[in-house]
Image 1: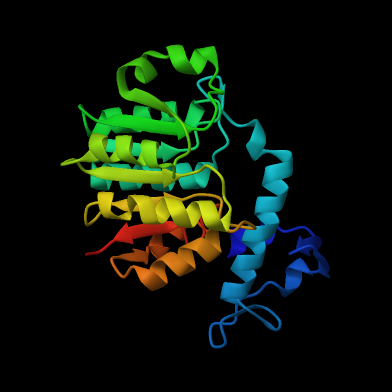
Image 2: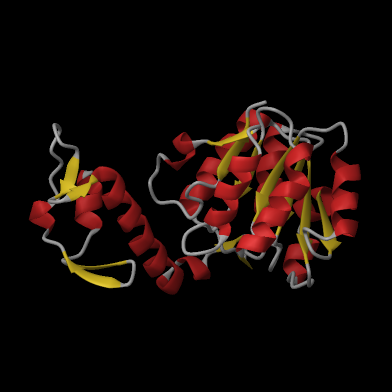
Length: 245
């Protein structure tokens, strides 16, 4: 909590509304659980996440590179994802949303350390990968690119065939609309073994959260693993979906 206080400026914009917060007032009351007067810890954390996401998106995160390739990933979520990969040791990581190809290279690098035979399947409606991303040795060895919609029948058929009998982990980072995320969740849910995950990225300020809520209401094989949000700064709030049965 102390570190969060130090990071907040005097003027903070929460959910688009101006809210003046004195850093001296950010003291947690152990009995009431109040972080700011009139605000619970949960609400404070939620608003801080939104504030951070807005600022990081504009000023920092969109400049992130991995091995010289533009890679729009939150470092905190990258850390959590590598922990999940170590625990699950997937045979296949399926990534919906390739963009420049940096994240596929990143997941392949992690996967090489936990599963010598592991592969990454990355999907996009357009091939926007850089030449560097295509020619990296780790990519040539471990990454397969599929052109098409991640929820389209043909792509889903190819993915299903590729993960059959294997331990799969899914990372959804394509269109973040309610309709698209829900269609992805429904398409891939049965391909995930118990103990593995579907990670829905960029849930803040998108239709993804609504899709997750509806998906969990209709499919009790999954639950949100809130411990994966323990670093607080996450773009995937509510999006670490673990298959439990």
